[in-house]
Length: 264
Ligand code: 2AM
Ligand code: CA
Ligand code: CA
Ligand code: CA
Image (tube, rainbow, N blue to C red; front, side, top):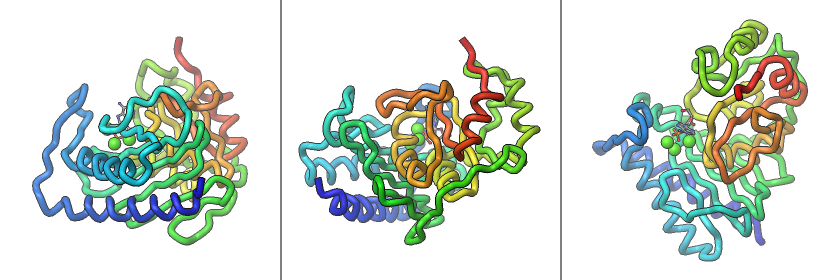
């Protein structure tokens, strides 16, 4: 497989999709809800997914595509090359803020992340990594992440972590919030992972993420030495939804060991 060629192809496809999203703000956007009233999707999410799928199917007919909006393939095994796509990560931000959303894409071969991309469309920040080749923000190589003590760490979590919830005991998380330097919540898993890669966040935690939220970002943060697992500390598989943490080495063990108590 010529990963250099697929890398160049992906970058140009993502840039073109980003352009389409920016242009879309000139027209009326149709907003629907999914399972619950706060889970938004727009016609642009669907259009962009279909744009990627039509190109990838034309140019790589034997690859498979897993996309959030369901226009891709039903993917139940890791075999072969799988493109894992979130056409707009941070749809609520897209609708309400017209910024702070990203295109997220990971390309996996037999379950191994080979290429990862996060494009923060409005900031025009493009993060990418080729397995074994380091991670980049635009053309700048991102340095390896060094350990940071919790007292100096900024952690990406959303407010649901300190409310009673069905995934984790919230009292230890209140201690975590007190013991770290600060917390941030961006509303886009892909952008939070880009911040982890760039050292602007020291950890990012989520109770429920889907493969397309983290497929690109996992490759990118892995290249700078972040540790990524589910909240049990086990490898996150790219076919199912689950819990997720990405953190600097050391901090990952501290957070899971001392502050995360899973329910059931
Ligand atoms: P989305 O915008 O592509 O839906 C914060 O809301 C983050 O969680 C975003 O990355 C968002 O992705 C993702 N998210 C929202 N609803 C989700 C769900 N039901 N399952 C998994 N991830 C979700
Ligand atoms: Ca969504
Ligand atoms: Ca998403
Ligand atoms: Ca999405």
